[in-house]
Length: 195
Image (cartoon, rainbow, N blue to C red; front, side, top):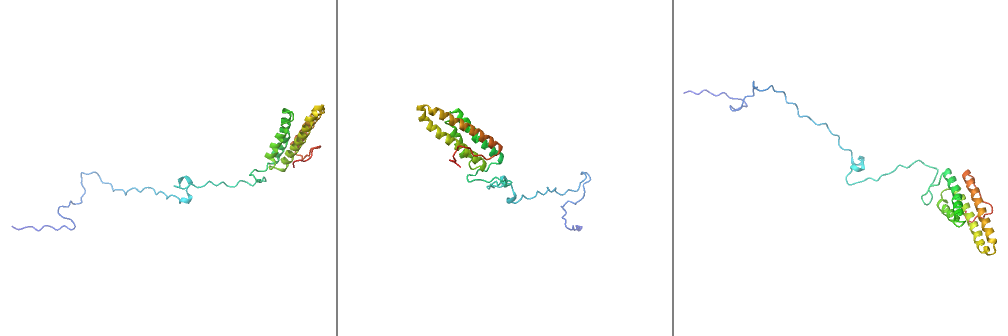
């Protein structure tokens, strides 16, 4: 019995299926290349990231310096008032002690003048002068009132007490009007105890 020589397959063994299209299979579409996702840009360097995105580090918030104002800071960090505010507080440095003096029969006007002088003496030359004038009026009035108390025993003190309050009232009114107009003013009959 003779055997027929088996054909030699190049690159395939007899058991390997032949790469032929199957007529019953659905038409085969060429496989699309795997879709590549859009490239995400790398995150910016840590120095360019906002403070809330940086782990473990919080940048201090720096404020840009504001516009340069003519007002300059004083020794206590307060700024000099602008002219309108200086006129306003110069006027109030006379009106507040005047009201306090009227409501307390002349006894609390000094407190109002002293508080305004201490609070605003470094906030501008204009408001300082009017606050000092108001305080000087109250110091002079207080001296006359202290002298008037013992003189009340001989009835003269009632007259001097009333005259001192009337003069202080008039001087405070004049000072408030001058301050409202933006004018420098030194009260008459009043020594400069405070400058």
